[in-house]
Figure 1: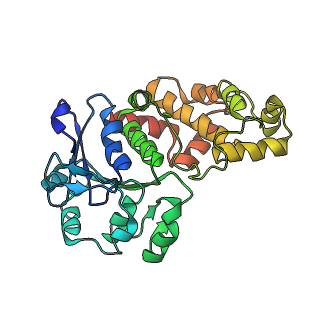
Figure 2: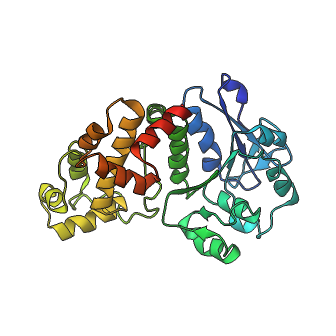
Figure 3: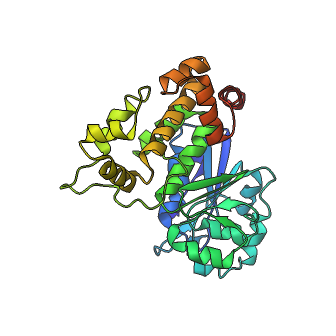
Length: 324
C-alpha cells in the first residue's frame, strides 16, 4: 500500500494536510507531498481520509492515511485532491462534508484539478473566483452556476481559497504558494529538485496550441531565451520577430501557440517577475530596479506592478519582508 508518513519531516513550520477521497487520482494525490516536501524542512505534509481508513484510487490500488481526519483542524494549508466529478453527483458524502467543516478558520484551502468540485459542493467557492480542468468546465458551470469560473487559467487565488487546473497546474500552484510563503530562492530550489519549471504565471492559458514546435517549424524558444537576457532593453514585436527571422504576424501567431500568451504580455510577465525577485532579495532602490527590468522609471514600474498584483513596489517589498 501507498503511505505518507509525517515522521519523514523534521519539525517544519507549516503543516499541509491532503484530504483524499475514494476514487482519487494518484498523480495529483502525491503531488503536494512531492513539491512541498522538496522545500527543505519548511513544510510537513500528511494525508488523511474522511473516515481515517484506506481509500481506493482510480488506478486500482489503496492508499493508507498517515493521520486521522482530525488533522484537518490543525492544518495551515488543506489540499483537496481530485476525484471523478460524477462520483460526487453534486452532493458530498456526509463524512466528507463533516470533515470539511472541521477546517480551522483562517487556514489556506487549495484544490487541485477537479478537487474544486468538492469545494463547490461544500459551498466554499460561493461568490469566489475559481478554475478547474478545462474539460470539466461545462459540467462545473451546469452544477454551480453561481461561481465565477475561469477555465482559461492555470490557477486562481481568491482570499484564502486557491484552485488549480489539471495535473501539472497543481505543481505550479504549489510552487506559487512556496514562493509566497518563503520567497523565490526556496521555490526555485524545490522546482529544481522536482525537475520542473520554477514559475508559470497563474494567468497563463491552460490549453496551449503547440507547446513543442514540430521539427520542421521555426520555434520562438531561442528568441524567448534571447529576450530574457535583455529585459532592460526595448523589446518590441518588431525586435523579437527580427531576431526570430519571421514576419511580425507569423511570430505573434507562433509565440501565442507555444506559450499561451501574446509576446507583449509575456514580456510584461517576465519583467514583473524579475522586479518582484529583486524587490524580495536585494536592497536596490525602486528606480534602479525599474531600470534593471526595462521600465523608464519608478513610476512606470509602480503602474505595472499595481495593475498586476494590486500594490506598489514599496508596499510589496515591505509586505514581503514582514511576512518573512
